[in-house]
Image (cartoon, rainbow, N blue to C red; front, side):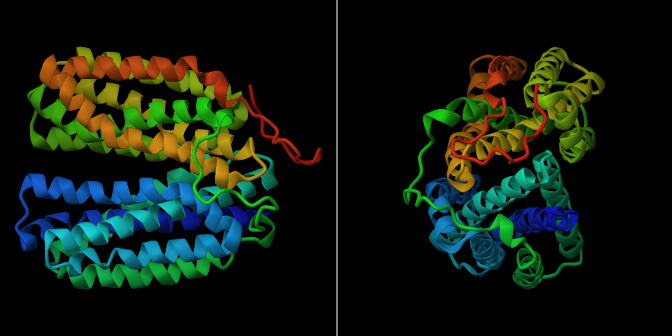
Length: 390
């Protein structure tokens, strides 16, 4: 593997990140056009997650049948093309159908490109997964920025999303075509069509689940906490979220250096300590400055964990796509359920107490740090490079 291979897979992640962000910038347009209530919009916006969750376990079979590069290319192209569909839908049921399809394409392409990332990482012999997810976040910020500018210019969402779809298809075709052959050979053993998590990756999946739970909750409740609990302005609340999102992106970009320096186990331990400290500070804060500091610590605490868990699962198996599909199946529901769980705890107690619950989840993540200790896949060659570990 070469530096070019790493740059190529990095750009694949960035393109994937731009897809979802481009769509999200036009949700208000869709809401107004279809005259959706908050409840109807909520139903529509959960459809991509349902589509992804239902199809992710099938992704390893697609990778095996087509090979890694061809599968990543096909699924990413479907994901890029699908973002143009929601703006064309005339009703809520049609919108839900389009979003189910979009989520399925995004989820399966996510598994395929992560499998490619693990194989390239394995070939390079050093951690790159965190930076890949960091550039996914950069792609998301780029897509959101373009969308905001186009929306401000009053461009029709159908034109915007069709144009972005075409651009991203071209970019995706270019970069997936440059993926290395050595990282795209199909596995010798045919995986099952529908992959559920195996015993070997349960612990890794739970670590990732905890991080995804905390991230999803903080992502949705940061602005609400700062605005309501600290009684700050909406601008200050938005600033708090910006600090959280920027911390996540920057930490992921430099996260590989941390993993290489202290190993995956100690990375999870340090991250767990930061996440616990952040949730405690937030739960005790009644002023915006310490609250924002707490959210920064939460971002530091969870940013690296999801890519690290995906990498650990992929490295522990001779069939990375199958292992990644299994561990993602464990992690993915966390980001769906955590915002609702936060709301339920806040309704029964208070919003600060809901962040105490997140601290308990962070403690579980901290306690299971040993699950990400690097394991050589059974049947792998002795000359395969290993990543640094604790």
